[in-house]
Image (cartoon, rainbow, N blue to C red; front, side):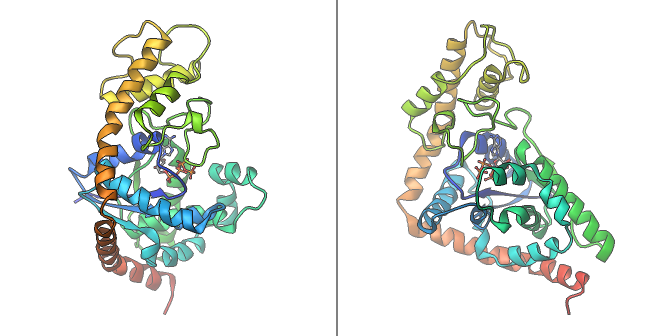
Length: 320
Ligand code: AQP
């Protein structure tokens, strides 16, 4: 059977970008493959954080992923399986410093901070460890992870070549539409959890009125023609992609006579897509003990199922 893995950082509240770029594709893959998903709480330590907030966000992200429909997969917390950090070290010892410094995400995030944590630089090694630990064939991710996915494949190939066949070389799967959801207020920047622009970011738990307001105020382009053209019309194209992804219809169908009509349709489609998520999240939040039970059982299972791969990697690299 095909094996699927992906992870979601607990750096903030999950956004519509996370949902369309990775969560929805991950939900769909459950029908055809063995799926394992993680809340990447260790990755959340790569930028400034507040311990109490991280703990709360981690649980929120886990409950939200279940509410989104990832309830037919193994869902666990990354930090509960120490194999991730151990394998990450072996991959840090496979990767080169220059490779890490070239990563766009590192360059962008480090430029925006005064104190850059060392873990932000080594982030791609941990991400590669997450994926390779599970011998994943497929990794549903958004476009922003393309460079990290290529590095993951490079590290797997390099390790296999040097030390013997150990890792499965994974393939990324990007969604056909909405692989890169843009910020509604700044349509040339990706919508992001840790973005300063709350007005441009739709969070999965936003009440319908907030979603409607954010989309109705979305920055559009000059002119008035509704046409899918990401380079020339980033704002309008972003709305068309959101509408298509949320309604399951092709981009540019139906045809819209004005930006206003497009915004209205998009807002309603997004609200409708997220309504069941909000409802299921409310039910799950009422029973925190059940969430603990699910996460603990999953971590135990993952620890057991990944011990063989970790042992093989240790042996291959020369640890006695
Ligand atoms: N704007 C986006 N459009 C499409 N997909 C997206 N993803 C993130 N933003 C978009 C995808 O969501 C998955 C989980 O992302 P992550 O938690 O690993 O963090 P990220 O990629 O760094 O995304 P964020 O939301 O911008 O988080 P922060 O602000 O913490 O960096 C990934 O598959 C990602 O591609």
